[in-house]
Amino acid sequence: MEQPLALTQDEARECVRRHRGRVLGVAFTLLGLAAVFYGLALVRM
Image 1 (cartoon, rainbow, N blue to C red):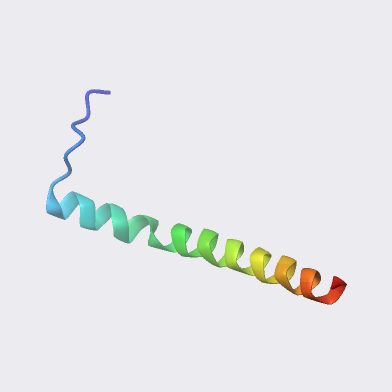
Image 2: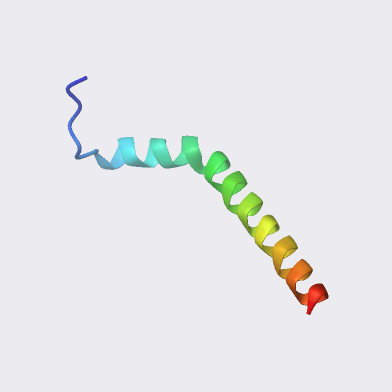
């Protein structure tokens, strides 16, 4: 488990490319939830 914290450029790029889909999914899910709660708050006012 001895892994250096400093990633090389190629490793960082590969990691970003591998995780971009998951990150975008989480971001859009959070945005959707925020929009729903905002809409409910506006309706209740």
